[in-house]
Length: 132
Image 1 (cartoon, one colour):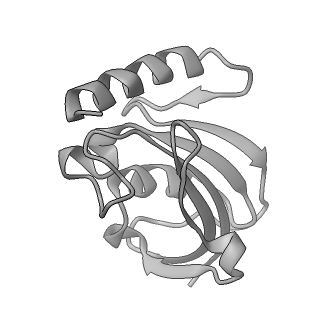
Image 2 (cartoon, one colour; image 1 turned 45 degrees about the horizontal axis):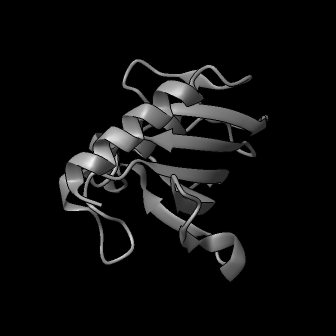
Image 3 (cartoon, helix red, strand yellow; image 1 turned 180 degrees about the vertical axis):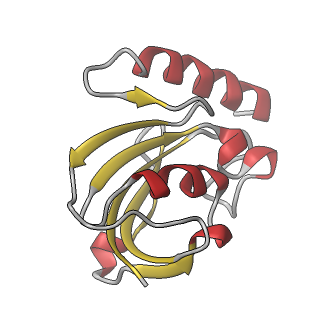
């Protein structure tokens, strides 16, 4: 699928998805669904976080899954895609959310490796374990 087709598919999906029960859309266009609300602190964009995640394309094709590896990742929030920099500070430690991130807040037109095509909107399940 070409970049423009990916973007159109993503825009159509996001438009339909935002009316689903429980889905919240942020002003930047990111959508999220709270699967489990945590009770801990909320990270700042300047913090380093430890989290588990599963990443898929809109069609469900998985491109990464730290849950399966049994190995959460740790990284400075500023080093992650823009969509995570916007959404994760809204999460409390212990929260588990599903995020739908438009292409321009993910990997944009360049994509990432062979698994994430340019223009793709992405779906992540994120469990924020802790602020480091």
